[in-house]
Length: 455
Ligand code: CTP
Image (tube, rainbow, N blue to C red):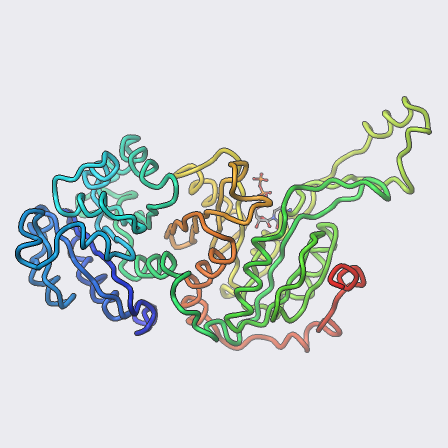
C-alpha cells in the first residue's frame, strides 16, 4: 500500500515545506520526503538544531534535491531565500515529527528559530505529525497547545499512533507512518489537486443520507435536523470519480446528484434497513451518513391525533405513545460482512465533543459497529455540521490512524475523504457479486415520491 499511494502527478506544482524537529522519529521524515518528491511536490526541508542530532541534513538534501534550511539568520544568505519567502511559497507546511516542544512553541507564536518563524509568517495550512512519549502526549498542556493550533482549522494533525515507543513505553505517541502522513497531505491539498477521473472506477458504493422520519400518526413524525448534504456530497464525489453509486435518501429536499446511478427514497429506519438489505450484498463500500433515528413510536395512531378528541384524552394518548428502539443498521452490516467487505464507513455526530474526546467516542463507535472508518464531527457549533454547507471532520480508522480534515465546503470535504481512502479501496478490490443477480428488479429503482421531488 505504501508504494501504491503517491502518483507522480498528485502534488505537481505544490510546494510543501517539510519541518523536521528533534525526535527519534526524525528518521521517518526521510521516507516522507521521498514519498512527497515521488508524488511530484517541490519539497523544502527545514530542520531544527535538535533534528540535526537525529538525522543528517545531507540525507534530506539528497532526497529533496534542495538545500536544507537550518538557521533563521543564514537561510537568506546561503540559499538566497529568507523565512518570509519560504513562508509565502508554501502550499502546505508539514511538521514531522512534531515534538511536544515544537507544538508548544508554535502555539505560543514564537519565532526564534527558522521553522517557528516560517509557521508564524505563513498563512499556509499546517499538518502536524506529533511524536513523543505517551505522558507528554497525554499531558493536558500538550493537548491544549494542539487544540489551540487546530482551532479555526489552519492546523490539523495526523496520528500519533499507539504502540511500542522508542523510549520503552507502550502507548500513544508513535509518529504516524510516512504513507499515512502522505495520505493526509493529499487530503489536505485534495481540493486543489486535479480530479483523478476513474479513481473509484468499478467500485460499487452505497451511500445513505439524510434523517429518518418515524411516524407518530398520519401527519406527525419524530425526526432530526440532518439535511442530507454531507451524504449527497459523498455520493456525488464518488460518482464523479467513477464509482457506481446507489444513494439511499431519507426525507430531504435535495436533487439527485449528477452521475449517481440509482436513488432509493425511504422515510423510516425500517425502510432504510430494507433498502440496505437489497443493496449491500453487492456493494464494495457502504457509507452510513444518514442520521438514523434511534427510536420510533411503538404504535402508529391511524389518522391524526386531534385536539378535538378532548384535550385530556389527546394529552393522555400523546403521553402514552411508547418508544421502541430502532435496529442499528450500521452495526447490522458490520456483523454480517465477511472478509472486510464491504468497506464500511460510519459517521459520529457528537454534541460538545472535540479533540481527543471526539476521537475516543469515534473509536468506541468504530469497535461497536465493526467499521473500517468513522467520520467524526462536532455538531451544534455555529456554521458546521447539520444543515450547514461546511463541515470539519476527523477520520478515525480501525488501524488506529487519525486524520483531521479542516473546515471547508462539504463538496470539497467529500472529495478529500475519497482521496484519503481511495488507495485503500483499490488495494482491497476483488471480485464482487453482481448486483443484478442478487437484487432482482433493484436497478434504477426509484419511488414515486423521489420522482415527484426531483421533477
Ligand atoms: N446508525 C445506524 N442505525 C441507527 C443509529 C445510527 O446505522 N439506528 C449509524 C449512523 O448512520 C452513523 C453511526 O451509526 O453512521 C453513528 O450514529 P450516531 O447517531 O452518532 O450513534 P449512535 O450509535 O446512535 O449513538 P448515540 O446516538 O448514542 O451517540
